Image (cartoon, rainbow, N blue to C red):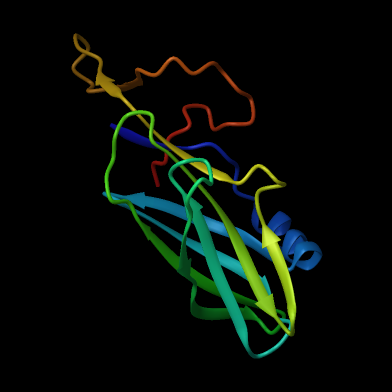
Length: 156
């Protein structure tokens, strides 16, 4: 099985602009085994901040929350927080959606990937035989979407 991401991450310049406009945005994300780890960048609007990542495995029928942990300030105007979502299981057709909530100074800001939420999906993968390369192919029947990565994979 292979966990795939179905969203783009911004460039550094895009990220600075998005944080300036929205006050919060996903900076990076990775998948390791049964954990999704990520970094969130926020606009420094005050000393006390609360970052939460809300996620679901069943299209928001039930949801869970993990807190973001402060990691550093890349500039006086911005802070970084990290998070980790532990996956209790991996199975074909599993979808994980998440969004980010930022609270500071009595205000609440959201990053929900322009309302679509951030999505990971677990798909079956087969190894191509015959060429000796061990090349991976996606066995799911998903159609091409120009908004996804070319193979939708997370290979950092």
